[in-house]
Image 1 (cartoon, helix red, strand yellow):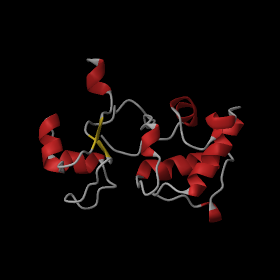
Image 2 (tube, one colour):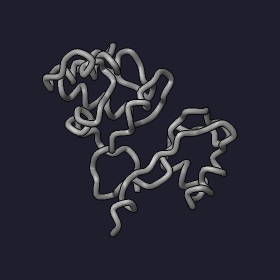
Image 3 (spheres, one colour):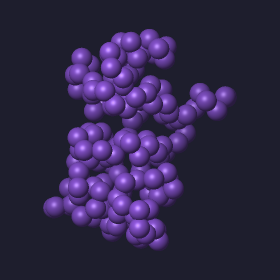
Image 4 (cartoon, rainbow, N blue to C red):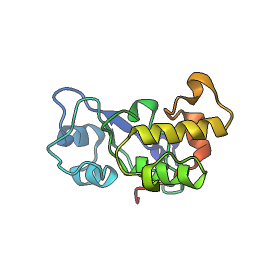
Length: 147
């Protein structure tokens, strides 16, 4: 199997985009996009700069691939963020009130992730609470989407 076919691919929404157009660009169906992006609750509402998963995750990979640092911004909502929060709690790096992460990226997520980065030995700007590929890959966030 070709390596490109097994990697999860993301598209960043631009002005004028809609999910049907994005689906057509990648040769997938609107239903597939909605299955791969459960945080999209209304297929008619996407925002400029939003990242949309446009290919299925590798079913042999048990962990979420690093979605990119630009994914972790205020108002981003995704089951990936909640799964990350639960892993941070398991690693003893929680800054969550009541130990309950949710789908929205928040200050508590950033503070918890900074604790994880410190636990790994990062410091300074490398421990700012914004996930990077190296620390993300070591956290082993479980895959949240079914194939």
